[in-house]
Image 1 (tube, one colour):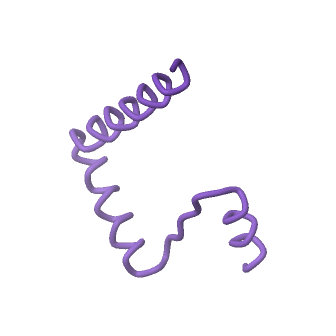
Image 2: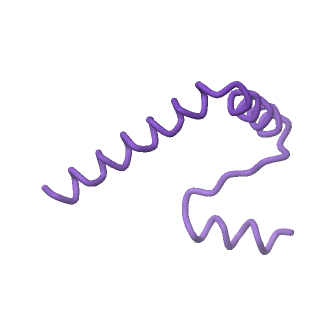
Length: 59
């Protein structure tokens, strides 16, 4: 139960950090720029340590 509570707290912290970043004009511009870079394939994401290893070996 405590682990589940901690996971929810972590998620709330992430949401608050995102809202704080979006409230800042420069932060919002960074988000827009990163979104465009992601759409163009200039940014990749990894969901696990193994994904990171695969990406690092690829380059």
